Length: 260
Ligand code: ADP
Ligand code: MG
Image 1 (cartoon, rainbow, N blue to C red):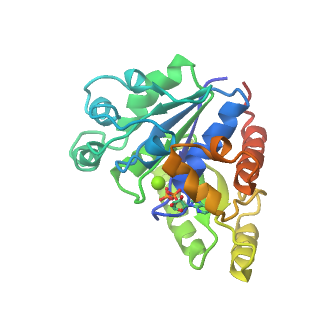
Image 2: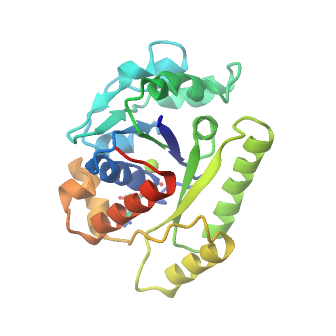
């Protein structure tokens, strides 16, 4: 089996994309599935959360512009089976430069092809910036599956509708006809509120076969871990957040037939 490319995209910020990208990747790596996180957000939150130092010139910015290759950007992390293509602030310029280049939606797909072909990774997880700009659109063009992180809050469904529309457009315009919504991950579930439950029920009603059974609880441990440059498994392996991401990773392994 080759690599499967997942993108975690959503036009909204602060919904748990990065938290999900790194902890899901860490859970897969823990199961000995070679996993690569691609940090596509110029803010480089996934890079710091994995404890990797930001470094000028170490991101996909060069390769996206035809300078250097993606393979040489792959960095080890402190975790076995978990690798990273880091980000740094230069990547912000790619938003503008991509828009001016030919075949601008296919740049990331082409750039990542050697990484896919290398066969080094079973799962490649792209962490997107909080907007459906050029970088996120490129990730949707490059991915096999979109994983949507959806915060359990008012208006969640409205945001969901917007991104689903974009997916449809990319498919019908043949930018990425094979793209599929791989699943919806409900994040920051608050057991104390009815709202959280209602939102989950609503999404279940509309997309019963897309929503993952395991919702991610709102817990302070998940928000603390990145400031120590650690995944939840390294920071507090017995916490509810760690358990939730581990269970989610099991669902993902089953749904997509991932194995080591
Ligand atoms: P995004 O990448 O979508 O902008 P983040 O994953 O960075 O979102 O999450 C936004 C903020 O919420 C961060 O401070 C993060 O630590 C925190 N956070 C994310 N998921 C949870 C959760 N399940 N419980 C508590 N805090 C969370
Ligand atoms: Mg983020």
